[in-house]
Image (cartoon, rainbow, N blue to C red; front, top):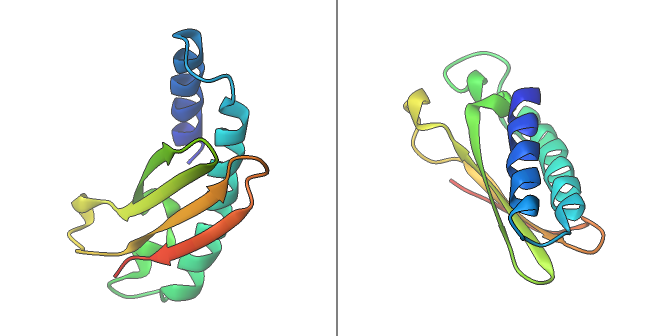
Length: 107
């Protein structure tokens, strides 16, 4: 998990160097908020043992990020290598304060 954040940080850093928006701090904060909330949700949703127990681990998901002028969207999708179809969720957060505006779970 720490490696993912480090890679994300580096990519945002280099995007900033190349002339992208200077608001990367808001994006990183939104990713942290969404990741923490999603971790709580997946622990509550999936049993600690059995076929779907691996879905309790945030590292079992791929993450995607998109943004509009006022919102940041963070998407978590189950890693295809697990052989599980479906699952994950989508967060819409305020770019201003990283507050969660909505969550949509994927089946």
